Image: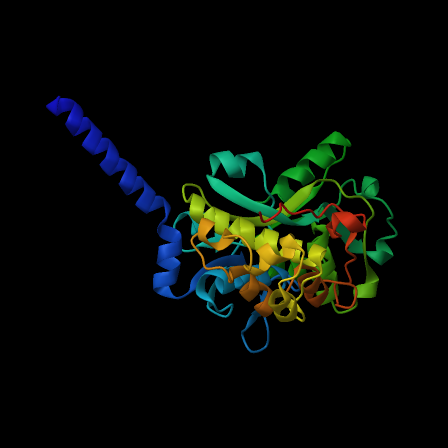
Length: 340
């Protein structure tokens, strides 16, 4: 009887200890008063410091959205620059609380590297950037080309698979950052630059004469990009997941930074909007936040469409169309789980 009691006490203690450890990230971030967000070293339109050193971009806004939800202020973010090789180490070591860095979800990263991926926030695919005067119109004509490729990425593996499957050879020119890639490509140290098509648009826009370069039509992979957190903290993963879902759902519901105050004050007959606003239901408490967490996200950062158009849309240097990233109601595949 005494032995059984001791075992029960130990089990309860371990359970409590495990719960505390798993709930630590939110506590740590709130105690610190700052979110440590792992981003790229610099990719225009997605994450890069401006001339004043302030980080800006599509991925950056998702960092700020999480900070707005958990800290009340989207500016309370410390950005942790990372390369393709260092990003997961920085996250898993605890130097970063969350990662938003044009990162592809894969099985090995999920199960082997122990990451929990958040909902996909950008559907992408790998492509090829070349000089227009090469006269090449298809990736099938790249046999023997030298290719700038970031190491430690799915891009590196996809490139090898594509050339092998098509009976072609290539000369890899290994790089670690986009800045290094631009320098090598601009300096004619490689014929081709390959990465996600969105990254190629960013790279081309940064070149002296973007019109002298072309992105080939072939897309050779699926690159579902999204944020990630460490395994083992379900509450923190839930917060990241539902911040992303709220941003996507808000666009579908027509709630934006411009009208969120008005729409939430009205508390109308649309229960989906009411739950987003925190005027109906108790969604905030399910993830350890207050009822206005999503309102702060939308007020300070905006919905998905606003983020897209602000940083990478048709009226930006990247000039990207929504494509697959259009809402499912508009012919795309962007689709978020409901808050209910």
